[in-house]
Image (tube, rainbow, N blue to C red; front, side):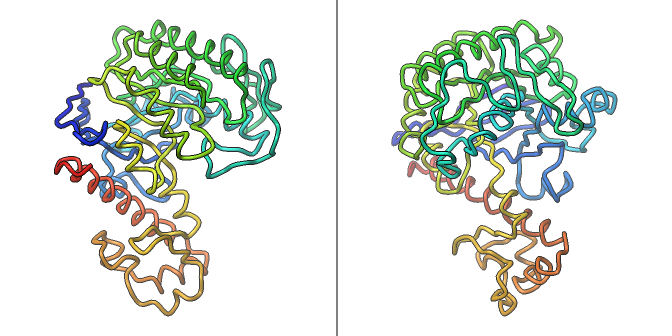
Length: 382
């Protein structure tokens, strides 16, 4: 992997760059659509490419469960398995430590969008989630498929990701919950840092994959600074900024401000799991190069289209009377060929093609939005 910074903003930490892998070049800043099970839900790989998506991220935990990394490896790796010719990432499974653990117990997410869950309940040092067990060497899960016990640690995660064969892989970490107290996060950070060192030792000497180390530390300034300095010192090819990012946008910005100055500016920075439209300018100004998010695809499968006029709930029967494009200013193939009344009809009739049409449009819309932000950086306006 090669990363080059083409332009730095004089107004913020934003920068334009090229990230090159053996499967092509990614212009940064860039949205990374989520392909959890080696697919962008409802789209085939050619359609995902047509939405202007440059790089995708697949999920290590779920691909380990099905079909299994050996099957993917036998097929020639993820690129051939899913017929995706451009760059690919795989996460480490660290997010599932949160989502299947305290995230599930407390009904919370990484950010304010899903707060506050069960109020007033802090997660304390030594506390374990109900459905998984976090230890020094890794995490014991229960398979959501058959309930079997499943162990995933840093060595296991890296070996799985090597078999999957993505261009960029991530170190195994614990994504902390936003309700964890200082003592819990401090202990968790020790684990994550130890796992980061094990991940580097576990990687094959023959691999061409780039590995990103993940900065944790929750909403605590001292821990974020400590983690960013430590992860930077280990020599990863890039960085992931993970964990919970506070209970509001102001805290998220502070976390990025605490983190970025301690990371080698010549290496790419990936913000894990964040990417609402209203967040993008702030996170890019903070110096983020890549960010993955399920918003465009998740909302699409619930009938929500993103447009220059705001979010449209196409399940609403009022759209039966709208014989017009989803967005008059959009030139994606959906807006050029289909109307709101038709897509609304498909949704209300339970036809799955509606989900494909909205997913395509939303990804095109998000990718175009990021393109416009890159142009603003280029023109010195951001």
